[in-house]
Image 1 (cartoon, rainbow, N blue to C red):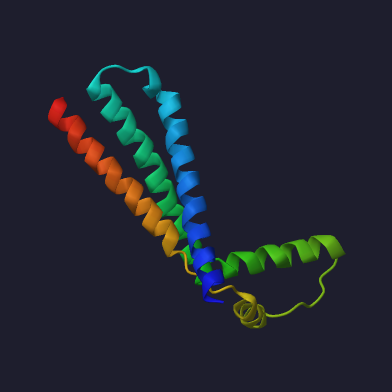
Image 2 (spheres, rainbow, N blue to C red):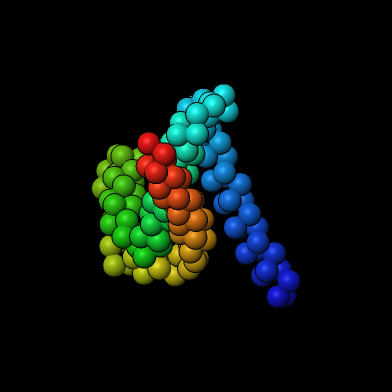
Length: 138
């Protein structure tokens, strides 16, 4: 049981790290970093790559956390009611918002999205290091 939990944590962090590194490599390739020879340009490209992947992971983690708190339940309820009315062509009394919210809270997954913040923080910290190196050489 404990091995399964550890494996799940390693998988979360591993996959997140691979995706963040892939985003970083894509930005580096787009900037042409693999053919650069000047140190300043290389540090600038590395800073850009790590910044993009780090900030994306921080913002996606924040979005997942806010969604898990139920912030978007009102919008979700409104969209469900709109489609219900469009589909039936007439108004049919559905559940109230409080009933919808209770049902949503029962089904909501209580996940921990800290791994997104950790990976995003590491990549953002690396971006800051390359920014400092870039500014010292410039």
